[in-house]
Every structure is written in structure tokens, then in C-alpha cells.
Length: 114
Image (cartoon, one colour):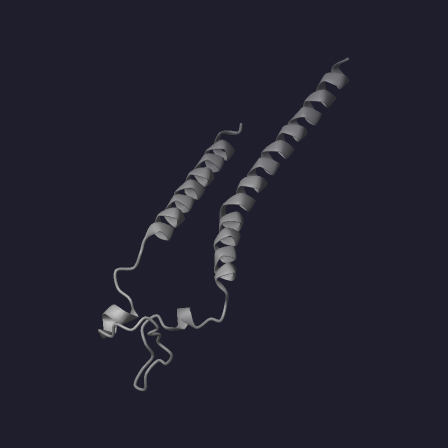
């Protein structure tokens, strides 16, 4: 009766576990290069302020969104809740509703037999 729902819940939890593990792994990674190593300038405060004159720089727009680091962290957790938590809760709610419906139907049948 609950075979597919149980399988879906298990796969959703497995997906959430692997995504959290991936985020934790990525958080531990440190970049091998920096602006200083790329340009060869050893100054401590080297930052890129413009895109250049001929074309847009690769991946530069992602760094000029104006959001704080806290907003980026919040987006990660919002995604995890929306992509894994909400479907899991809805599946559990559906399983519970089906169980209540079956209980109500079963109790009506047993009451009508008396």
C-alpha cells in the first residue's frame, strides 16, 4: 500500500543527504589561485573592479550581485528545504491522509456489519 511512497521518501532523504554532503565538501575546498597569483602582483589588497573594455569577463556577473554572504548562505538552505523538505513533508502528509481515509472506510464497514 505504501510501497511507492516509502520508496519516494527514502530516495528524497538519500538525495538530501548527498546534497548536504556535497555542500559540506565544497565548503572545505580552498581555491588554488587568486587574483594575486593570476596577475603576478603580490600585493595584499588586489581586487578586480572592472570587466575590461573588450568583452565581459568570465563568471564576473556572479560576483557583482550585491548580496551579502548571509543572503547566499540563506539561499542554499532555502533550496534544501524547498527541494527536499517540502516534498518529503507532503509525501508524509499524503500517506497519513490515506491511512486516515482507510481507517474511516474500515470503521464504516465494520459499523454497517453490526
